Length: 115
Length: 115
DNA sequence: ACAATATACAACCAAATGGTTGTACGTGGT
DNA sequence: ACCACGTACAACCATTTGGTTGTATATTGT
Image (cartoon, rainbow over all chains, first blue to last red; front, side):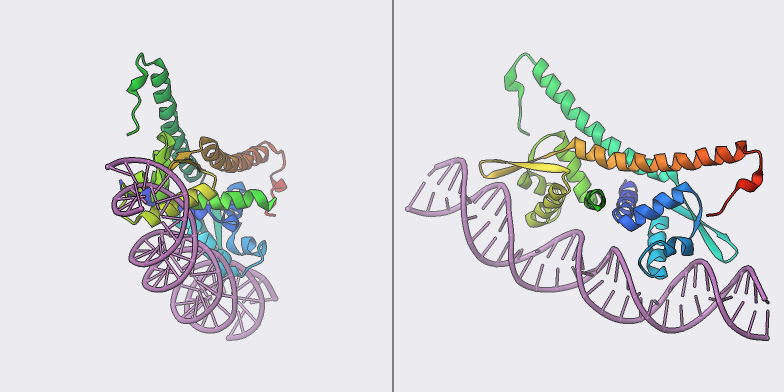
C-alpha cells in the first residue's frame, strides 16, 4: 500500500529538479555516459553523478557498464507510470463531475450535503 | 524559457509528498476547508496548512474564502499540465525509436554516430 | 609500467524542507 | 460583549538536499 506511495515520492522528487529532468530527456534519446552528461552542466562531475544516482534510484533511468564508462538510458515505462499516477488523479476529479451531474439529475435539491 | 521549468520544479515538488498528493485527491473530489483536511492527518494544523500553501503556490489547488473558512479545491488543468510534461518526455523517447528505425532502414551501417 | 580517464563515494557545508509551538486576527454563535 | 473557531504566519528545530572537494579504484592507451 505505502509501497506505491514510496515509489511516487521518489519519482516525483526525482522529477522536481530541472537538471535531472534535462538529464532524463537526454538519456531518453539514447545512452549517454555520466561524464558526457556532466560536460553539459555548469557543476562538478560529482554533482551530476549524484543526480544520475537519484534518477536511477527512482527507477527512471538505468545504467550499464561498458569498460570504464557507465552508460545511462531512460526508462519510458517508469515515466509512463509517473504519468498514470496523474491520470489517476484526473479520474478522481471526473468522479466529482459525475456527482455534480447526479445532483443536477436529482429530483430533490435538498439532497446536497456538505460532508 | 526558464519560466516553464520553474513551474515544473514547483509542481513536481508539490507532488513529491504523499500528504500533499492525498490532500490534492481530496480537494479534487470537491471543496474542503483547511481544518477539515487537517483533521484527517496525524500532524498539526499548521503543518497541513503549509502543505495546502505549497499546493496552492504550485497552482494545483486554489482557495476561496467563505466566512472564517478557507475552502480549497483542486485544479485539474494544472494536474493535466504536469501530466503533459511527462508525455512530452515520452515524445522525446519516441524520437529515439524513430532514429533507430532510420538506422535499420539505412543502407550503410557506418552512418551510426556516437555524438 | 605508467599516466590519463571514468566512475564511485565519503566528508563537509549552506540552504531548503517538513515538522513543531506560539501568537495574532477576523468571523460566528450565544 | 464575549468566547470559540478557523486561518495565517513567525520562530524555531532536525533532517534532507544540492552542491563542493578529496580520495580510491578500475580501465584504457602508450
